[in-house]
Length: 30
Image (cartoon, rainbow, N blue to C red):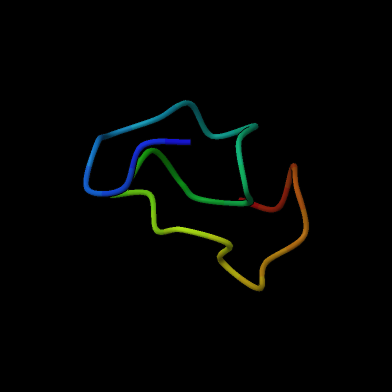
């Protein structure tokens, strides 16, 4: 996954925010 790029809420548990390399968050967590 590319870091610093907005992603879908179902990716790495981010709520559509910036993605980080190997973010320690479960996938699908809002």
